[in-house]
Amino acid sequence: MASVIEKADTKYHIPAEHELGVGAWAWGDSLVWGFGKGYSETDVHDAFNATLDAGITFVDTAEMYGFGKSERYVGEFIKATNKRVYVATKFFPIPIRLTKGQFMSALKGSLRRLGMDAVDLYQIHFPVPPMPVEHWAGALADALDQGLIRAAGVSNYNREQTIRAHHTLEQRGYPLASNQMEYSLLERKIERNGVKQACDERGIKIIAYSPLGMGLLTGKYTVANPPPGTRNMQYRSLLPKLPPLIDLLNQIGAAHGGKTPAQVALNWTICKGTLPIPGAKNRRQAEANAGAVGWRLTADEVAALDEMSDRIKD
Image (cartoon, rainbow, N blue to C red; front, top):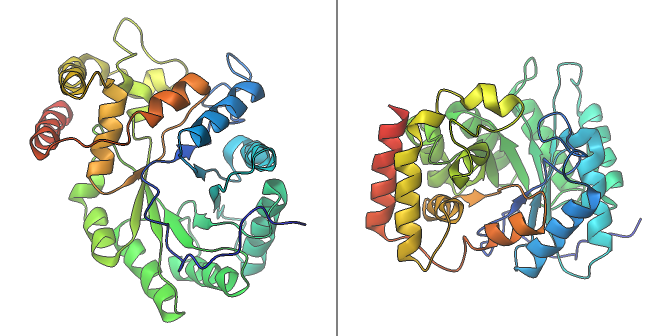
């Protein structure tokens, strides 16, 4: 099986040039995002191409997204381009998966779907019992030893779990490259529970998922026009509080040449030192996401957004 990833020494970290990525959760997922109802494989392929055309080459997927569909799409899309793509995917340690052999089997399944010999970043999706985080960190180190992955990451790990995983990998001579956490102007828990500090101190990159608050920070949704599906119930109580924050995002965007609320919200996460991975269902959304890079909020603007965010969430 020919690898589509160039052989290169990445030093087991995420390369610094990646400021923004794209999350491929919606590429094949019908349960949460309604794949096949309003958007199709053609649409997400267009989103992929538009993302690369904008110079954004970090793609995050997982074996659970669309039950393997997302990985297959990512692999097929990469085969159709000559551009270098940095691919991150994830292992889900459901309770019936207890052994490193099962971990390795899942990794090889992901590699088959992606059409790769090695993946740039492999992450433990959740710290699910009964196996301790040290067990799966050891499995990541084994995969690094075998050259099947180029960097090791985790996702949804709290401060203690992150430190323990980092220590286990360090004992094997590898860094913990990343911790993928929900992070946005509507979800700043990692700033308060020690996760972000622990990662910053150890050089562990925070990959920010749902950086647009599941679409709420685009300004598209209101009480009169709530998001569809499960997001409606999840965020119904938050919608009436959003207008002041959306207004501020609009004001700041106007000061930067007409940036949208979503672009300002994404730039805020970049200014916080994280790597946001917004989703994109089509070319238009991918092009809009790309407008979040190439400029920076001022320190005063970041502080104003912090203050408004605190007011919304209190």
